[in-house]
Image (cartoon, rainbow, N blue to C red; front, side, top):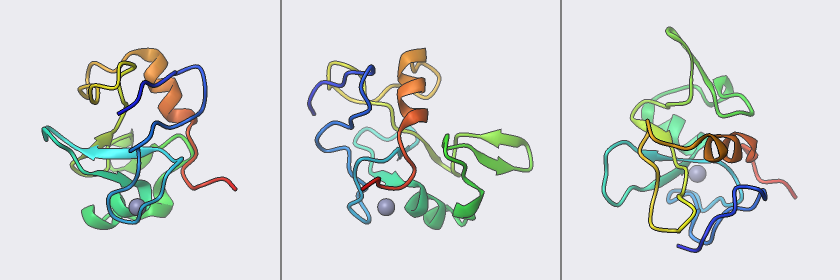
Length: 109
Ligand SMILES: [Zn+2]
């Protein structure tokens, strides 16, 4: 995967939903998987039995426990800046969180 610059709203090559092929949007990844499959909001929600209309533009899902950025077993897929992989769910740097939150939920044309 290529390097990511958190200061620009551009997703790296390969940052593509593995199910529907959507790119240029925020993606989630399966939790604690070495080679995680990426999924867009709609696909992650579908596979976890969640209502995609409950996911807001920042990628937050309304749940019984309040707003969360997890969709079932899927967590935000935030690539590291060196292109080695993805940040662990609890170790994403703040700039990465902001980058991810600002990505669109749906492709912008
Ligand atoms: Zn998808």
